[in-house]
Image (cartoon, rainbow, N blue to C red; front, side, top):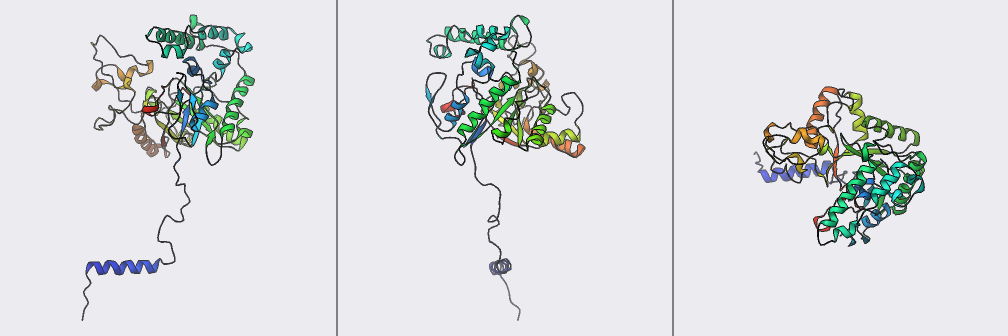
Length: 409
């Protein structure tokens, strides 16, 4: 006589057979996994008074202040108000600009060697603001704020050597000066590193005006990071030269370092270009180097989201969420009032929306597709990266919450 098996009975029977077959192994497939499961929150992109632009716009907080704030301590902001994080961070990287790092701060402090240079004198004069930032922010009218803004503009021009067309500002700094400032950065990170509770890394920003910026992050302690000085855009504006610097550091020290690109949304279609800085087509060697040294991409920060754009993703209802508005301002050819925009963004924003070039080389989502195309052609994907978000705060305050936001500068 034949037996009839109904569906529930069959399922139970099969389950029992599987259980017996794998009785010696764990039921859960995740028991023996070794990858990290904890989530840590931090910021890899914060500027302090060591960055020229931050100090010129009123920031006087130091890397020590930035770490104290990130750890949950109460500090005083440039506005004079006491500020504090709702919840402390797990890690922080102070990434001040490598270009003239610490120069303006030392001029403001009266450094005699810097003040002896013509550039130092001009900058010191420009820094002699008629009002302080605190006075300007707390004034009843806009007059003082306008005066402060005019003074900061003059200070920026002095720092960039634009006063009277004098060219790039020469403060006469040498490697000894750079090492002394870099030593301050390293020592500050070490003072606040508290294993198991709060982690710091030594780092800085390599800031190239066109093509995107990179934050350089060292995984090592002072015995290794002190062997080098930051590689700046004054040394080279070509990211391939930056990668060579990173490679040289690892080979000489045995340490670890990498870079995180950002500001692609303001790169004028250069961040993910399919040509090198020299205008040559990408090669497999280039793709390997970029993938090796830039495994992450800062896809969002104060200057806007960099994932996608309405011109790239017209059917994505969230494509315009918190992007940098210069990229989508509609201006007809006969408009009397044009939106103000950076020089390298003009080709993306002039004219009706339907006629503008699509900025596919500026945003992460389209870059991922471009990378797949390059992998098919070269055998290596130059744009294979993870994504993070940071603040790019120039106030030394690692916060972007609307309820606890103190501005970019």
